[in-house]
Length: 106
Image (cartoon, rainbow, N blue to C red; front, side, top):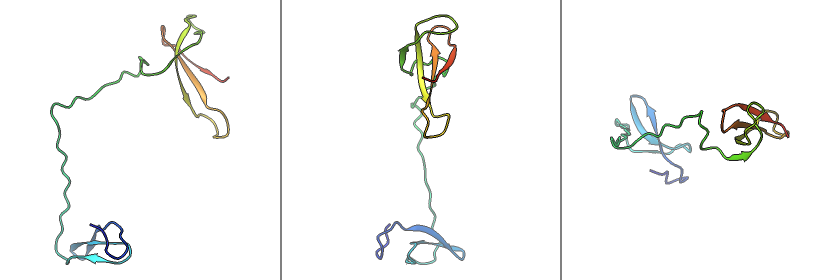
């Protein structure tokens, strides 16, 4: 429902023991009768939940980088803003073979 005065969305407001639909401009719709607002969510029993293993890194992009631990030349990477917003983000790399994680500041 929308306010006929200012066209804003009406929200439930408590007046005494009753509820009315009201607006921030002062308009109220309806009487002070009891208003029940319910929201129901239907769950689909067939809906599956995808579980992502964070150790695999298969969803991250792959790049050419030499692992300092095992020497493998492929690594997954992601960027995180670890310092102030006026400084560049930190690039984290994870070896595709041994899963060793390191930072690249270049």
